Image 1 (spheres, rainbow, N blue to C red):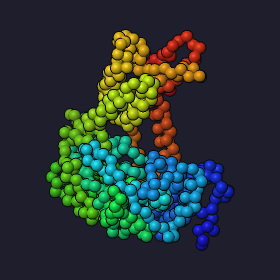
Image 2 (cartoon, rainbow, N blue to C red; image 1 turned 90 degrees about the horizontal axis):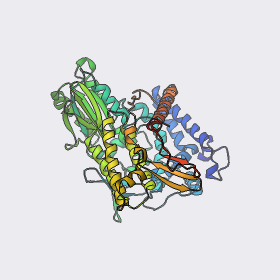
Image 3 (cartoon, one colour; image 1 turned 90 degrees about the vertical axis):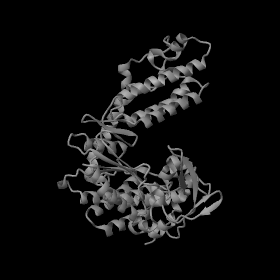
Image 4 (cartoon, rainbow, N blue to C red; image 1 turned 135 degrees about the vertical axis):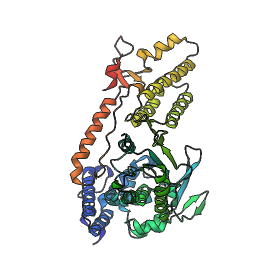
Length: 509
């Protein structure tokens, strides 16, 4: 059947304006196809699942959704080697109409480098917009199958899962007195850059011709074209899913070799290419687990990183996803790692020192995004004491900033100007009245422990719709508990120069 004549490829209304597209109907249609794929995989009907995946890649609804995701995410304004971005609805609609599978050829990638925490540089290969859209289209089709076949304790780059779920899984496995005491912290060396192409082409259920185009596209650096013989581009939209599918199956092999009746207490938790494996003794890790993991990775062209992989005892603690997991006299404590706290301090200090001379309300708006994001990530663990210490650190840094701003004023003037009611505040006069800006107080953030997602929950199956809906409502209520009033208006005719909000009313809004 011709692609233009396929009912799944035609919109029921005119395509003369990007802004008039009914996105709710588009998302509903694509979601319906994804549910059918997940149901077919669950029933073991792989042939039907692949046929439905092909139908998704031909669907015009899916093409529109792929263009929307590519153009509206954070990298939507980042061009490839052709220096092209889609800035208006006409260009986006034309790109969706031109997104054809027949005769598709991928363009080379643009190579850029970003700094890592250890000072080294990480290479990123950025595809052009059309290649990103094609990858996103196939990612939409592949997502239900990848989610249905994924390891139960894999939490990275998966829908409805997060770092907090991986940390909560660590707590469940290690919090008891009879829990395993030895931990193998594993990290894969250059995971994205070393995956074998032949393994990907053989095991990833995507159109082989198009998949080979992505893998063999090459990259341009300093006006020179370099070939890619292994790995998947780290800047591609489908690369995280391919990496997950490459590593899926490791948990199954571990559980098969170490069943529960052997009582070796072997458990597996993975987030992207970082994973931890527990065991009852150090010898089990050294003699049995590491050879198994090494053999599994070698088949895919990967290897463990000797610098980042180590064996530790739970009483010494280990860092996982910027959290420190450690037992103190049979009591498990998870709190922000020293490196994460120091990195946050350095970032706050850099922002404050680099913005001397600007109005206080502008500085508050810059700081609030950083403080709110860091505290939201760490509020699900034992971090209340660290929050209070960081609150004091921020207070002293702002006091230094205020003294620099007003070098000829004494400390009492500075206190009444900025630290009213023990909060760093500032006002701005507008036509509507006085706009008050208040710093987000990290010390007032309540600790609410995260509830781990069910291991077998699949967001593409209808039987879990109610479960994920309840989790969404729970997260919304949690956000309300942690919300603080940072911007509010006071009447410009009011005689009160500053609005005072007490601590109890500031905790939630």
